Image (cartoon, rainbow, N blue to C red; front, side, top):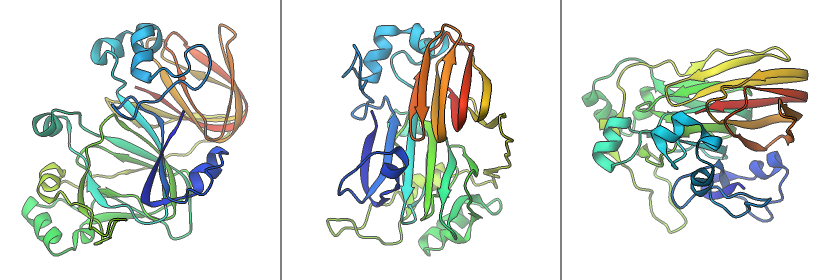
Length: 313
């Protein structure tokens, strides 16, 4: 069951993408598709376990749901967060801390993430990484002069683009972009610049300059991933210690190999497909749907015409 987040930069495309009528809501910037974060837990929508939150579901089923490794390392805490993002305005220029900083400053978890661009209006741009290696003092001076954008790498955006954003990477999702985000389960964000925007209460949003400068990876990082997939192919988009992200293009019948020792999350970004497992379990998945596949499955047969993002935590 998705959770819709209303923000000043949000729009109306998430409802249309998911085939859901959001009524008069015109500033939906995020749909949290699968989350175990405290206060934002996903809830089972139907069946005998309807109403149960994700951490409780993991507690009930344990390794049968998440597998031995995730259970051993995280217990009932689900380590990833899956979102849809709709930017009608440029998001703030921001950065997330790595594991060591998040633990020492907040007692929390670091935050690496990746974006898959579902749709982009003409002229949409994304900021990700730095042009070159900078010193922290150089970046501090640019922030003080409101010129931090002079240091970041800008990309023209098209549907299907993939961006790898390890913790410490300065980034900004640009206006006109509808994207899928896979991230570590952390809500720690440091804003460097927010264009002096005013919120609904007439206040400028808080900046976190000192923490952001401490968190930034000052080296030049190539964030845009060169990825292409032919009909029926399964290709890797991003692989990090925290997650392994694949693109599954289905045009007819495609076999998608899974790691039976862990769960997988499938998000459909285009079309519609029927998933069939070896035990005969079938599921119909359409554009905008997110599915948590329990551990124990080593493959899926996919039939239809669709594109899915498949993630192994």
